[in-house]
Length: 473
Image 1 (cartoon, helix red, strand yellow):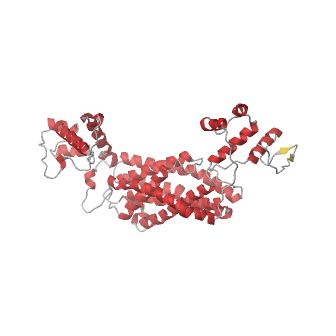
Image 2: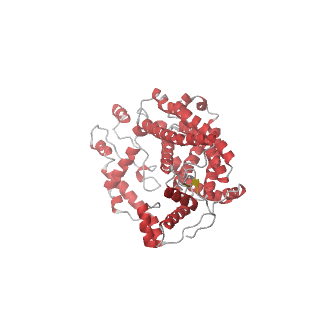
């Protein structure tokens, strides 16, 4: 590596570039403490000391470090597993750790981690993000309290109500098939199940419709989730604009790379990163219990790509570009969540108008500004300062992944906006809606008559009269 070449040229023994030391205890090892004697080093090129350092340190130092770690674990009453206590495993783990923090992976070829250590210039460190995980769990607690004491009363105030749906009668045979095989049985399965449980095929179909409805999230739950996200995205967008609006790189993107990578870390940038990362980690922790839509897989990819992108941009000091990307995404998200809230409350005109505004902002920010300004800034401008390296390719590959997701969602958004404008839109195409017994009966009658049920069930060109009495199961 370049640092090794400089070391050879200056007569200093070669050593692999290493990241921060990793130890099993919070205190530093004896050989690193102040006043401890340093090991004698050979300066002769190709000597045994140099070969030992290339393998991860001298044998005596590795043994001393292993004894010290074992003593720390024993002092705390923690038994040492045989595998973890073996010198070979510790050497392998330390080697992998060193390669993970290798300068060439995170920084351009002419820079090292030591170049970032400039006095009186605070810069991003990996340890700064440890606080993200406690904050993520704090967000989970805050969301729980918000949904109970803010979102639920607001839902009552906006007259949000759940539809009253009939529950499926307890049936062990059908419940077993529903849980283990399929929630939507085929016609052959329906006939076999009807013989096992003594139901008619129509009753089996009705039971599965009602059972599926029981698993669908309630309108109140959807409203509370949308209300929480609306509140966060709105506050995050306001905070993000206050962080970047007065910065010169907000108006001239070339200044994003001024003095890179030795750029001063501002407290506002630090807290903006911490809050955004904590929120997306909390979304990832709650993904199993949140409302699942048809783009569930894409949502998971988006959350993971966002977390990886934000974390990597922090480690590589791409913080200025990261704050621009975060603020750009928050610019449209709160409009979508507000449209959902009014949709669940039944305020259709307000919902339609907000969704059209959201569609315009989404197209401008995600399909115009993001690819033609932000991506251009992260792909083209850095090449004038340094040659491409692994971090450059990885960061921009994550950016391209996010851009592909924006195009995927833009297809659905524009299609829905067109239906809103023409008055043909009645539901969110990504959502899963409850089925009613009348829907199933109309489909069955239409199929028996051999006619399409798109405009209602027909028999010989005439609509079937519907007696509004309740049929027995």
